[in-house]
Image (cartoon, rainbow, N blue to C red; front, side, top):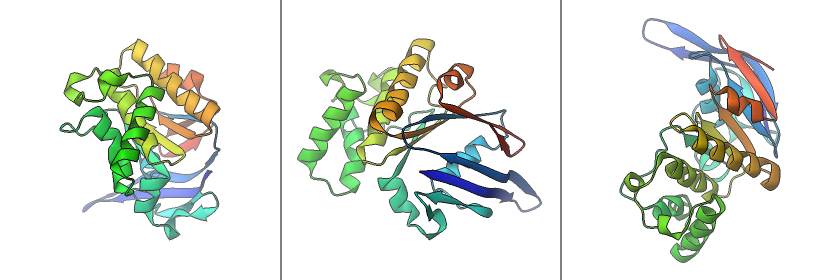
Length: 219
């Protein structure tokens, strides 16, 4: 589903350039749960941002189902194909849980009634009940907020979930729940799930682990 071919990336500053990625090659298949790990500054987040279409590689290319991302409408790709789940949840604070999940569908001009119905179904599928619908993020625990952020990522209908340290702000019980949800999305529903993580417990449960150091990726 995603293929990374000889990808390099250079951050060009005013006084210096930093080679964040060096000829990275890897592939990611639908229906699998991947972990990308490594020390801070190793290039993990840069790789995630490229997989999310937030920028293009300085060299090499990223293919999405055989099509180079450089030729794609990357805004549309992020709206309809790939969604990002963040460590800090990034929910809209003035929207309820239900409204947060409805938001991506409204961008796609889905009717409000259909968006609400789908959002309720997704909130139920990630293990939250009806009482969550009208709660604002400040009223929810960290684990609940992360579940809502996953439901929002699913709402647009894309089949790629990219997660940046999704368990970083959670206790062990909520961490286990989030990993279980993501594994289920991959194994039972055919999503491609890629998680950036420092957590060895998450890595142990992944189908494959890519380890990064100094901009290079190793299996």
